[in-house]
Image (tube, rainbow, N blue to C red; front, side, top):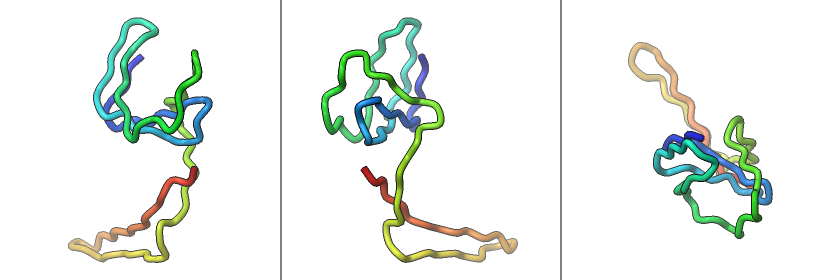
Length: 85
């Protein structure tokens, strides 16, 4: 098992997605994973963990959408999303 800081994980009995905040390596089936935010509810024994293609449910945070034309005519487009639990 290998997690890198910034990876997302989701537990089977949670609708919340969590972010790994420090690298984790393990050669066994056990490891301590530091996540943010803290767990919303306790984990069930042997909870399945989704760590590949983690599904998110999101909504627009506000109605503001921005785009900027920068140097070399490159565009930057910005949308703000919030996770929906």
